[in-house]
Each structure stands twice: as C-alpha cells, then as structure tokens.
Image (tube, rainbow, N blue to C red; front, side, top):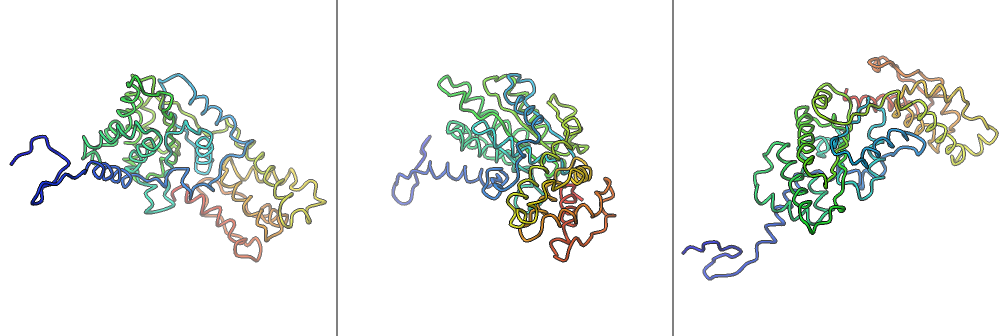
Length: 373
C-alpha cells in the first residue's frame, strides 16, 4: 500500500498517528549545536573574567572600529585588525564586543591554549555564528531550520557555501519579508585570533567565506552585517586579505601603545597603592611610588606589548607580598629580550617564593604561547 505525500505517521500492525515533526526539528538543531563551539563566545561564563581595555587605553582604535560599525558604507563590511603577539588584540575584541550590546550577532575567540575544546577548529566557526543568530532572532531560526532540512549534507560543504546557506541566505529572506523587523538584525560578527585556528588552509577559507558574504550582501543594504577579524599578520592571512576589498587597521605606533601602557601602569599602581593589604601601610609616605623613572623603564621594556605590562601588574599586586619590593625586583631584573631572542633570557630568582622566582618564566611562557613557539 502506498501513502503518496503522507508523513508524520508509522505503521505497526495498526495505523497510529505520531507527531514526529518536533522531534525531527530538535534533531536538526542538536546537530547544529554539536557542530558549533559555544565556548568560543566571549559571553561564555568561563570567559567572563578575561580582561578588557582600561578606559584610558586604546581609545583611538576602538573609536575607529565603532565608527566603521556605524557607517552606512556597505562596500567594506569586513575589517581586519592585525598586530603582533601580545599587542592586545583580544582585549580590544572583548572590549568592542562588550560595548555592542544588541548589535553583536556573534563572537568567536580562537585559542590553541585549550586543546580539545574546539576553540582552535575553524570548521566550528560558521555553525557557531548560525547558532548565535538563531538564538537572537526567532525568524532566523525558522529560516535556518528550513535550510538545514533542505541540505542535510551541509556539514560537508565548503565554508564559503556554509556561510552562504546558513547565514547569508536566511538573513536575505528575512530582509525581503515586508513584515519583518529589519532593525532587529544584529550587525557585527567578531572573529578573534584567526591565526590561532590550527589549520592554515581553513584560515584562508574563512577569509574567502566572509569576503564572499560581503559580496552577496552588497545587494542587500537593509542587512548591514559586518565582520571584524583580528589576528597576527601571518603570511597566508595577509595574502588572503590583500586580495579582498576590506578595511585594514594595524596596531602600530600610530596608536601610541607606549602612551596607553603608561596610562594603564599608572592607574593599576595607583589602585595597588590604595587597596593592597600591605600597600596603604608600607607606601603611605611614598607619594612618588612608583617613580616616573620606574614607569619609564617598564614602558620601554614592554616595547608596545600589553601582555608584558599586565603580567607585571599581576605580579606586583599579590596581596601576600610587599608591592614595593616586588616592583624593585622587576626593575632590577633583566630587560626584555629583542624579538627572536626570548630563549636567551636567563630566569632569575626575584625572591625566595617559587611564584616570585617564576615571574619571568610566566611572562616568557605567555609570549611563547601567543607566538605559537
């Protein structure tokens, strides 16, 4: 017996009506969640303590990014912010993401520091973006479900095709709906640490995918979706972006990193001085602590690397130790290495505590981690 066009029932001895539609939809979305990496979102609870920019730092670069986001120019929907390891790219990304509020469509922070977490897998990026948009916009979820049902093999598609089918086309259909609320569509996707994606070929494919999306959306001005990508200027990434029409920012001397690092250090040391369990007592007569000379020394040693400054602050602020002595240990310690000479630095004993002896090791380990060495 044939049941042409029939669905939502099973035959088991007798005819029984069964509603399988909801179970099927749940299975589709469960597959989407499995393909995604929701832990890579800056809003994930385990990422909430990650640092953001000090209010007096990175003001110009953040202003430039926000100006680009608010721009009506849809010709450059992709911005690439590049900078060396330790220059503060991820901190800038988290700061911008936190300020976007309802404008943020999705964020994905790549990281090699947590093997097995999925944060270093580029193939998880687009399912994650789709998940975030489905959560934020109910009509997007409906359109995405239809697309996933139409293309059950979408997980084997290229990233260019995935982004087109799972993000661009559902957004275009929402925008073309006369009854749809165009203003409800979040406008910014942040992809941080693209160089941390473990497969370099996928790094390039991701760039091709977002540039392709930019082209497709150029015909849909009502969807002002933008991609902010942050990474180190590695050769393949630089080459891929050089072939695309994108807005490019470089964290170089133009943004005066030394000035920002000095402002950060002065603010943090002022906080240590007034709140440290030992500080208010031992520093009560030290109105000039730290001295301008000490601040200048630290800024010079940082060489534009915020990771150096933040690690020093964490070392000095330890409530169990005298901050004045700890700062002096840093000042009397070895100067920062020239690029490429990290391995030649000898670890020094800053004081008798193991954590203190390893402060330089901690700094160097951080630099090695973010440099991928």
